[in-house]
Amino acid sequence: MLKKILIGSGVLLLTGMFFFGRDLVSYVRTSAGLAQEAVVDAVPLEFQIRRARTMIDGLIPEIRKNMHAIAREEVEVERLDRQIAQMRESLASEKAAIARLRDDAASGKAKVMYAGREYTSDQVRADLAARFERYKVNEATLAGMEQIHAARTRTLQAAREKMEGMLAAKRQLEVEVANLTARLEMIEAAQTASSLQIDGSRLGRVRELITDLRTKLDVAERMVAAESQYPGEIPVEQADKPDIVDEVTRYFSADQATLMSANRRE
Image (cartoon, rainbow, N blue to C red; front, side):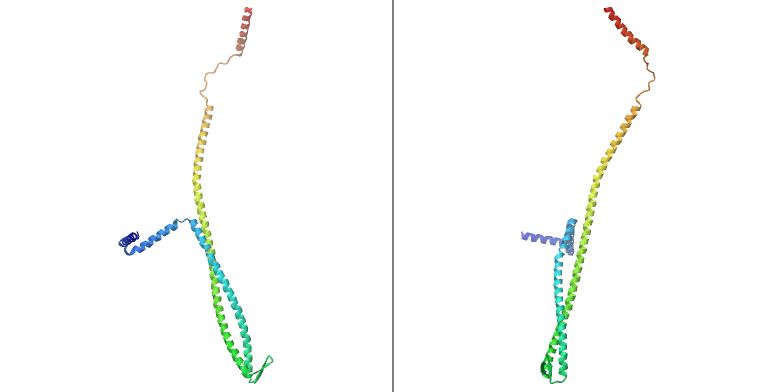
């Protein structure tokens, strides 16, 4: 199986070299780039914004790590400050003692009194030489400590500036992500509004139908009213009205005839 795969890969490679020649690598890279872009474009914008927000949150551990390093360096620099201050004070005291011993050694006195004790000129000179050597060593040590202090101060300042830049960049990224989120919400709202406009067109068609029906009913009502105003043809001949005298005479004449007929039967 592996042999078939290798043979197939070789055939594809040779075919590509035959058609594309030296440009095969460029075509492959371009195709891979296009495929990658297509995959990225297929990812929903909401997911990509959430991914950006997650990446920003991922900066927090690095920020905390740098903050811890800065705090530790601040402690070290403060410790160096105290050590340098103590050494400067000690060197000032040693310098004063050396100056006194030098003056006494240069005075030519055979013996000198210090703190209630008497010392010979040779003892003073020996102590002066020892103190002077120790002073030079301590002075060199102080110079080294000051150089270290200056270097660590510069490093600390650079770390602080880096931290400030990182925090500013993080805040800027958060603002940009918030802006992207707002723009996405506006787009989604516009898409929702466009879908609502489709429903509005349906409502418009219903309103149009109702208006048409209302118009037809108005026309029908007007037709009925018009027909009631013009009921038919105009009567040309006047109908005869019954005479009231004749009507009463006929009525009572009928009653009299009925009474006479009844008497005859009796």
